[in-house]
Amino acid sequence: MMLDLQFGLAPLLVLLIFLVVASVKILREYERGVIFLLGRFWRVKGPGLVIVIPGVQQMVKVDLRVVTMDVPPQDVISKDNVSVKVNAVVYFRVVDPQKAIIQVENYLMATSQLAQTTLRAVLGKHELDEMLAEREKLNLDVQQILDAQTDAWGIKVANVEIKHVDLNESMVRAIARQAEAERERRAKVIHAEGEKQAAQSLLEAAEMLSREPAAMQLRYLQTLTQVAGDRTSTLVFPVPVDLIGQLMGQAGKSRDAGIRAEP
Image (cartoon, rainbow, N blue to C red):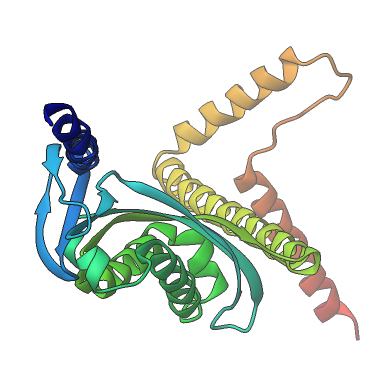
């Protein structure tokens, strides 16, 4: 009789041990378990040792670590009608496991699709020059929009980085020509500014030399010293400007007198 009783309790004992083992769950530090009791949400448990009653309760694990999601290249038409391919990377994490499981079927897929559409919508409002020069501002705009729309899913978008803006060959050549023309324009402006400053300095020097005749004579001597130091066969004879002016004036008077003397 006792032997029959032992054989009858043995399956029950094995079943009990199996249920105990099956009900024990261990969650890591970065994991949380969303517990459903008879199909209805009960609570969020973890990390550590979690008891889940088989057949009555179900648990869905949620990873709380930051997820790095690569957004595939998107065809974007900029505001100035330039077609480009843009790809990016999105960094986000789950902050509310309950919402991430209940409010959306697959939060990874939903975030990926939302990131693609948001990237196209935001970049389509800007010109090509803004995409290339103001990348940080565009990253912030996309991040804020994604963060606001995924808040109902219990997801926090930490950062968005635009990686590449690919252009076709014709547009690359056009941008290169534009950059070359811009550099030439800057060079001409700098050269003109230098000529203006040089002219201003020469005007000031001329005014200073005109105040003292001896200063002009010293300038003549300095120029002769510089020319004499060069290895050249050129001979320079300094002639005062006043003397040339007097000679020209006398020649003009003589010509006028000759014209009057003619009958």
